[in-house]
Image 1 (tube, rainbow, N blue to C red):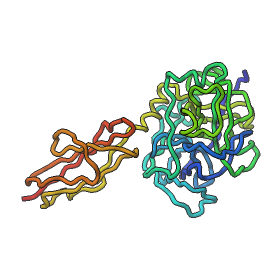
Image 2 (image 1 turned 30 degrees about the horizontal axis):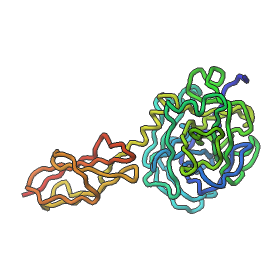
Image 3 (image 1 turned 180 degrees about the horizontal axis):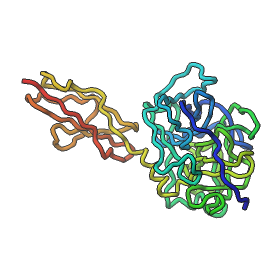
Image 4 (image 1 turned 90 degrees about the horizontal axis):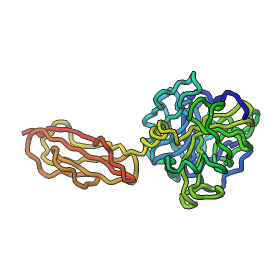
Amino acid sequence: MRRGKCGAVATTLATLVVMATASTSHAIVGGTAVTSGWPWAVFVVSQSGTECSGTLISDRVVVTSAPCAGAGSDLFVSPDRVVNFEAGTFIAVTDVEVIEGYDPDDPETPSLAKLSLEAPIPGASPIDVIASSEAAEVTGEGASGLAAGYGLTSSAGTDSGTLREGKFTEFFLEPGCTTDQLWFCTETGPPWVCYGDLGAPLVVQLGADTVTSSPAPENGEWRLAGIVMGGDSECGQFSFFANLLDLEQRKFVQEAVTPETTIFAGPDPKTSKRRSKWEFRSSIEPATFKCSLDDKRFKACASPYKTKRLSPGRHTFEVKATADGVVDPTPARASWKILK
């Protein structure tokens, strides 16, 4: 096994935009151009020109490598290719979360980040995260996975102009790539990862003897098993991926599929109106809702929700979303006072 320190393949970003697979840009080294599938792969780029890749894990959450999350607050997404930041349709990134323990100066700490989106990316769909019971799909003898990224086609190359995929095999988990179980590593190639692939998805196909191309929801059961974390500086010796079988990292990613309920319209804090109208939404769509008035039992409801005629005094309204069978554990809550 070639011993060496797995180097990062991107610098810290400041301001980012994210674009869905409808866009075309860049490439996995030694891979092939993607002609279909990969509805969860996204392109990440800073206004200064630094580029990464990412993976859609819920309708409004992208997971990528922590250095791609940057320190800036002006984050956006776009379903269209934006060359040199020409005009495009942008969706705001409302929040950035970096995994606990990440240290940019220590390459052997977990390095994942989540970007929360203000709205879904048109034409894209999320992928489920691998479960511990599915470990054999990526770690056993003959196991393989597909990765698709937007990086350079060689360490000294230029952009390919298209999303490219490659089949990665012979993953190992042992010291030499890392001192713990944070990463999947491979020294078998091509393909390899390169600059711009940081944050790209590594996916496996459940129950398949030979992983197929064009990963898509209608083409088998797919799981996100890893996230591109880096490779060697020459983009031709080794590749390594965040290991989502690792409990800490998998938990960080899976928490993104818990819906968050937001109330965005309601009565004034003090009003003389006896009836009120509430509007709300879920961070994950489609979703169903349950509402509670004045701490009574939650009942099915929909936005907009109109209350009955209420008596003067202080009242409370709560609403919680359910998406993909997961209930928001922290309902949105608001209070207001009806004046006499």
